[in-house]
Length: 148
Image 1: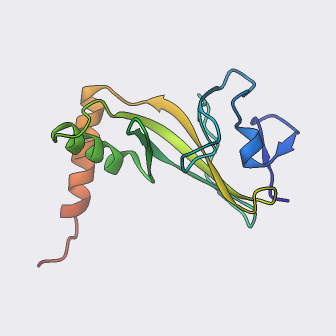
Image 2 (image 1 turned 135 degrees about the vertical axis):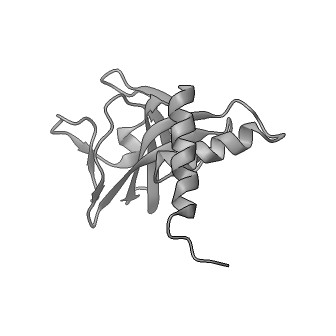
């Protein structure tokens, strides 16, 4: 059975849907529990786990954007920041929050499907850092970009 640890120093292993339920221990704060979204849970977790890929478990590090009723996950802070910046300049909701994040995915035999939890780390909101991240995103398109 694909299992994950519920805390970095824990010996207890549980499936994703149970590891991050609404009664999260160790000071984590569950923003959402299982239910209608893509994620079984969205949890504030100051110390994010490292990236990992095994046959049973995949943990991706990156960034998450809170779109109020949905979450967008990116594999890096730079594109997530550009996404937030573009959204704030549009007629869409201007208060999108940006976080360092980890996405945990594993197959759950109880529910017979892959399930995911979104772990939120530090919120990114300092203007100078946001400006640098957007600049890094833009530079990724100009460095070695093929001519049209």
